[in-house]
Image (cartoon, rainbow, N blue to C red; front, top):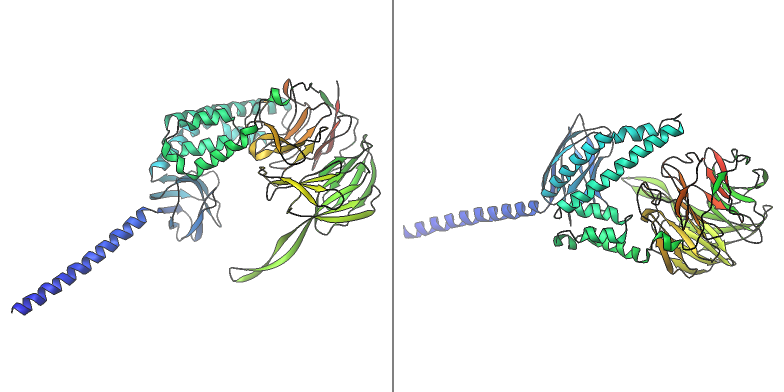
Length: 530
């Protein structure tokens, strides 16, 4: 009997132990789930699809959607602003993701609001979104942006709409700063400061950063802000940058017949002030200062002719992007993809005779090119660098790193002091370097005012005048501005040259006359009036 009792006790002990293990495993699993981002979602009217979550630091995950329902799980290092989107159907929303439970209810379509709950950080974002929505409705921001894209608007209407949009963005910036000051613990405050850091002054960013809860200092976003601040160490005021540089006034040259020169990819000036233009497809055109086509030839490029540069001997250097086709296996099938094989400089004389060619080591793309003495300078937006090469054999002499390209654009110019001036568009500033690649000065901020650079990324190109003044071009909408000791001044009379995030080819001749190219409207010339 005693033995039987002991056996019963042992059996109960084993059962209790097994249950305890199950409970421990369950608790462990719950703890693991609590340390993950888990979203239970429903998208109305959706059948089968795939939903993705992705943030700006490269983290990406996905889940299957069945009958509109999904459970999306992933592991996040830090709270982060992330986008949710579907593979097939139109759907997009931004959330502030962290490792906790979320719910989403929405529907497919464009500009459709979703209801997202879960997490302290998401509640902060929801609060800000409601404030921003009220401000947008007050200024009819969305309606104004759509109106601005309508055809046939008069200049007075464009000015009125643009002014209203500018007022909205000024008020939005005030709202964002107010949110940061009132919510120093919110991760979205750090996200806003990081957004400002690419365009606002160093002092403004440091003042806002001083308000932030110390807990954010370990996050990736905080480290990104510190890196952006380090890039601003050479920032100076425009007055110092343009010290002693007199203003230059421009007017449109109505006699220039350049409307027929469409689809221009890049331009440079020849020693005799003729314009050398590269059309899409590798066609080179020589154009007189009056707008007459003097010559034309097709370059023998093997890849894609992207940019050109002209030396003092009238030799034309064409940057040829080389590609090869590579077969790769993806999702059970073999597809062909283009593989970048580098950049080759192909040299022609002004009559179209090929002289020589050489590879440019270290480049994958070539959106910009210039020649300064015996040096060929070429930009590369893939690695955000400028390579400085020997003009004879293409040997790399030095390079400029840490630039901020965008939309396949990275433009620059060389001034009469042999300094390289870069349109550092994603940083919303202009940088100067010596020919050894050492940075000297920088200026510029993001904003809607005349001194600032607007949009998602600007300026898209830059040119230096003989007296040291700088001309910049901004897209979407087009603003061509001259910077001098008197500040910035927009050149009047220039219509919208490009649509969206597009490069505007620009060059200046020895008389400071300015040429700008539009894919559809041809080449515009501006002449100095003072």
